[in-house]
Length: 267
Ligand code: GRF
Image 1 (spheres, rainbow, N blue to C red):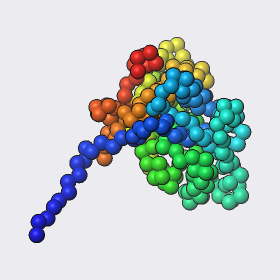
Image 2 (image 1 turned 120 degrees about the vertical axis):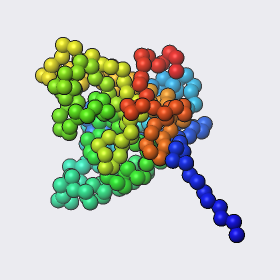
Image 3 (image 1 turned 135 degrees about the vertical axis):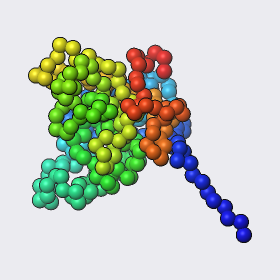
Image 4 (image 1 turned 30 degrees about the horizontal axis):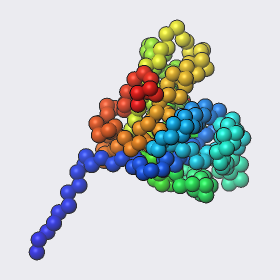
């Protein structure tokens, strides 16, 4: 009898999304102002006008804060919005919103509401202020993106202090923002892309609002649409079993793809 042994390479690269002739279906989760949702949607519209095939289409917006600005913007755009107030949900259950068992109930309900509208290929967290539990993370394995207004490769990062404040305290005069894959246990999963360096020159801790706005404008509103519409939707992003990220088959450094200048004219 011959034994056959199947060898699976540790470096097998799996695409986060394999394009077909349809746009990739996206669910965006928001809790606040939703400016990143607007940036994603505007690029979607621009690509639709150009007659592109492989781009992202926001099919549903989910919010845990009904009537937040982001949800209102989505409604104005005509995007279906589903909401489930996390405040009411946990009040009714008489559980702490950080209770892990109750988190799974909440997430299961959220998935149900989302999937009554569409079966998303990609979930984009855009200022969603709840930690996702295991049901959510495993249902959309390697398909949940989040954005952080700082460089997630830095070792000085601690929870509870805004990233730019930590950068200033460390003496940095620039900062990058990062898009990464959400994970259950780790705070940040693998980084897919980072923005250009954004200058912090002349800015102080008390300018935090101004700095956050600057990071959104010079970083987030550029790299989030780029990674969704121009990288993932086009099937350019892969991951191996050791969580290394690949773009067009090339292994990326720790911080992911380092964004350079304007992509719109050339990419
Ligand atoms: C962003 O600055 C992002 O870094 C953080 O939440 C903020 C969301 O902003 N995760 P908005 O709601 O998209 O305006």
